[in-house]
Length: 139
Ligand code: HEM
Image (cartoon, rainbow, N blue to C red; front, side, top):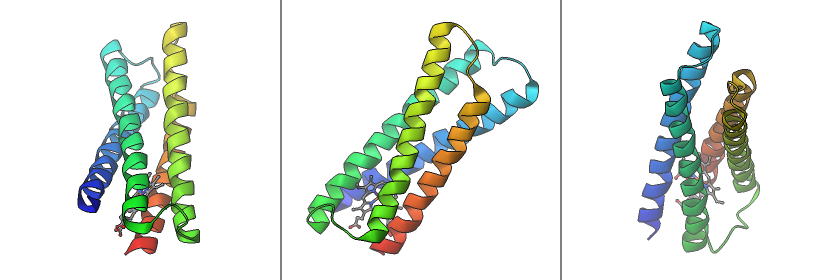
């Protein structure tokens, strides 16, 4: 069971990172072009954003599962709490970015890319923090 959960955990990390890098690069290109993104690109970014959120939820579910299967719960010490703080920051930023994109679409205006890029950078800080403290705590 632990092996299966760990495979899901690492596969979700890979999928989340891939969508994050892809969307980040697209955002930089769109901002450099100084124009609103074409519809196709906007649709692609929306799909990538949703995939990133699914990956983040899979990380949380598999992580909580591993904590209970292999470590008797979530009271796993300060290094683990720092890892969870990073994971929480990443989750909050991904959710906020989804909401910003959704609100812009509903209002029929271009997405606030500057703000979304800042949130994407914060997501990275959270993910790297979760990886570093995950490795420090568990290897
Ligand atoms: C952005 C989110 C996350 C990332 C990037 C991440 C990354 C990682 C990585 C790279 C490992 C492997 C560490 C190693 O074996 O050396 C790991 C293990 C682990 N993670 Fe996460 N994680 C995230 C979220 C979470 C969450 C939210 C929880 C639980 C609340 C969690 C619980 C665990 C546990 C329990 C292990 C150790 C499993 C074991 O080998 O016994 N993770 N994580």
